Image (cartoon, rainbow, N blue to C red; front, side, top):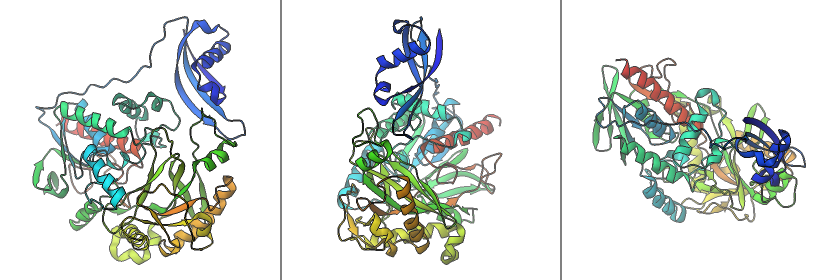
Length: 520
């Protein structure tokens, strides 16, 4: 027989399959030798009290042979001779998962990616980190896999109503992710593993007859009778039955292109601030109420939010055992992001600490109309560049010094490879952001013991949290209200906020296209 059992275990117990079998037997009033095996269904850590607990739910097999996890099966079809061709602008999670969905229905995806494949992209990132030289078409934001490939691989999402989260996780597992993403409460792949998974997805698309063209930047849309019939991309014109616009949150040239052609776009609230880096041991001690973290526990994370003078200040993309990365997409700007390897074994913990930016905050940028948020981002990033000390050296300040408007006379060691330079960040950040960040950081110090410390450093700027633009679409057809066959999609269009939600949105749009073309 099979039984679902919920257990509350010590961390060391939860790491030992033999001990878990003992508890299963006790819970079901049987003997351990009758437990042939178990599958973990859910796994979470409860660190709210001094004693840390691990809560797990398992499917136990009693007096019958153990069976492996029942995984979703996928049937990707040969689309070589498909009469339908769907153009996909962008090879991020939205674009890639849209392509996989199309393959299942026998429709040919043609992906056009402005950047390079993951292998070539890695070489450009090495130059970026060592020399501070930005390739505007191949960086942490542009290239195969999108911004997510080299920014941690967090798969946690609150957007469960937007699509089938389990299907997305199963697809990642199908293409090489670890099985634990199927049951962890906060699943995570790791930047070191994501490139191989993205490569496997690319291979499947190509093996099925789909197309992926790298270094093909979208420069124009082909429009006939208010219908999008194709795109201009670098040196080619390609026609198709529809265009999925999944270009990511940093494709400013796409926003400007649409605006110049009088294609409707809208301002979207976003967030901007700094990236805070603490010693990981400090976060472990505070969150796990210990001197030394148990080996069976992962590096601790945190999630913080505070309302300050009518605005939310919150942690974003927290990376335990992580590294701060340079995420600029153009010369003359400094942008930072964070990532972690799969083991999360670096000595620092970093997180974006950001504040919401609304249209009413952008009065000086009203001359730019709906692009005001984009130009606001750009100006702050350029200030960071000019105050940082050259190349991609980032302006930084110790945390307590930041709240006291005191220039740091020295800076702690930092994971940001291009280097940091001591600056009073009130010279970089707008006053309404600096003030609220200062007040929020003091409150965060009351929530996490030791958080408010000069051992921590703040690095500017964390500015690409999400797109400052929404590209509208009809709720029923998912097409742009002005243009038939144009499907805005993913984070860049303002409909997602991470890898999983972007992947789900890509599938959602692909499903709508499938329904339309197969009913023609």
